[in-house]
Image (cartoon, rainbow, N blue to C red):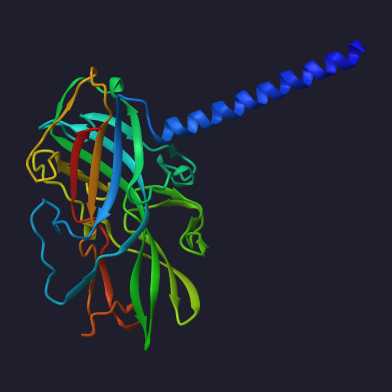
Length: 308
């Protein structure tokens, strides 16, 4: 009887631990989704309706003979976030996030196997406000190492869709990359790939095929309106000044005494960001007919903050 009593209480204790463990796990998930104030939270969205800019932040029109599409963004990988003051060169502001790196390919490179992919309107990153030095920051630098998007294509008389997995940072270690239905690997095998490398999954006329390509990093637009703080080409880092929803300059002030979350809502411009040189005149992207891809970089960024 004593043995049975011990077994009974043992089961109760174990069940209680399992229940508490389940509750604790659920609590962690909820806290990750909705951080307890005060936190700094980044929510990112891609938007084809905002300005299309060039590399120095001026309005950019398409060159003669070029065509473009505003791609449908599926997901992207943010690898770098920095808050900066005037005249802070790259890395001299407050770097609040930097993706994991690996030396598996030789030189230190972003580890794509550990990438956390973000979709539109999702929380991309958060941290307690007390982790950020007090002060006022005028500029935001955001690095996007990878983007996955859909565009419309044409092959012969057939129309279809292509999913691109394109890399915007100068060095990313890639073994395999899931596009839509296909998982592709670089032809050269696992290793470091540079800015402008892309993989494609083409779906035309019921057929699915994969391919890869490479643009030089000098062809990738990397918007930076801070002429006194240049960002090297191929970093995949976009810069903008903090502003309000009405377009007014509104520097970000960090205050540890806030009782609310400080939410930064970011818009990345996909306004005709997929650009090619047209070989014909039908305005369809036809790589098999001689159309040449010219640019896949984001065409600007807007960042507005609010206490919520």
